[in-house]
Length: 68
Image (cartoon, rainbow, N blue to C red; front, side, top):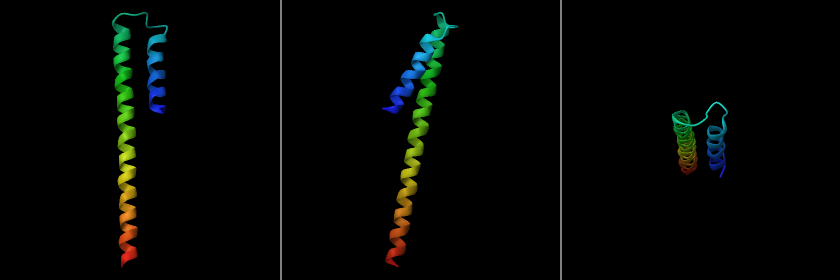
């Protein structure tokens, strides 16, 4: 949900800027913002995955030590 709100905010910023009166600049800006949103989402997903992997390793390490 938060990612959607962030994307929506960036998209609105691209549409409502006073220096973009339309034409090619608006399309370029939207494309760039879309790429930034995708990169942010990808980074967040990678961080979440890394945190999950780290947590799994810690659980495995704790479990292994408790068996010995």
